[in-house]
Image (cartoon, rainbow, N blue to C red; front, side):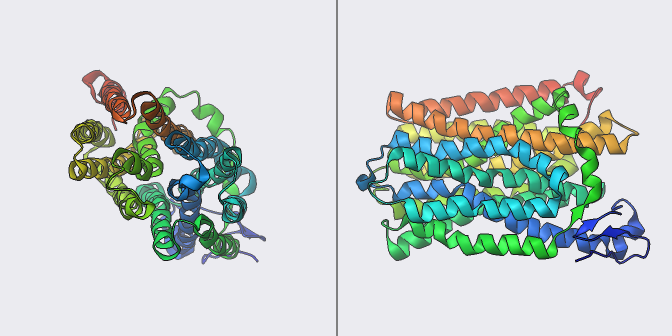
Length: 444
């Protein structure tokens, strides 16, 4: 099939490859470019959404692992840390894959790979399965974590600079909703079939994965110009701002994905009396990821209006306060206050996701003023680096909970660690981007 833009001068190559793509050209954009970009965005969001659901599948599956499985709380936190770690590691090669294979082609491949963890989990999780087998199944789910990086890199190339904030925000928010969606699927299975049917949760996603791969094959396109950015990651790794933004993204996205994996488990361990069955915990676990996903685009919009660094700075102060509320609630055994504090953290992590990502193009647009291609090239690569490093924060969150419960029999030490890290992010944001001397160099 050949993709033909609604403009006579636009050239294309057969096989869904678009050879002439100029989104900054208003006439080009209005005469067909916008419609093509929107079509690719829609199917990118759907595929990324399914990827997030598969990645966070084990945040739900651990709720099904009752006494018959012989798994203790520390082992459950390890089961949720493993897919987070593997997903974080895959984000760098997935970002490269867009330039190597093309955005459409890689979306088909990455969506199809989701069948492996889904089919395996659907048929192999049952009482008597060894913990090592469960660890392998959990690790396989990590393939869903890479989809975000390739999806963002692909959509970044389709949209003009004036619309990137909106497009990337919608793309990321729609993907993040997969975390809440899989919680709702888990709740449905628990309510309908009971805690003895974990395989159904994974099985529900098998036809959706097939639809995502088929839709990408039929409706998406590759951009040949994306192949010119292969060295962007190497050059971006030399930029100090890449690692500063990665640290900040650990605090925002790392918190979001880490809490998404851990929330249900923490409720069951910390408030065992109130959440003595999986379905009781499942009623609440979807709410935080849902609100955090929906509010992500607002974080980008606030950054557009007020400045990304300012929004990020205030947001981290609020996150430290939110974590303090959770700590106080846990010590006082106040479930209502605990839930309020945790939901607040989800919302703030979503806002911070939007504001930190919005900072990246602004930083390099100012640093490489007059060289739009270089600014776009480096910022796109930094988005990939930050996405990968930030996802490691999800691993750290689960390991912090695991170690806290192992050592102190509660999660208080983990909450103290979160507060300290958020305050570190406050200090870094101010020192690098907001203090007067910094603003004369870079302003975002």
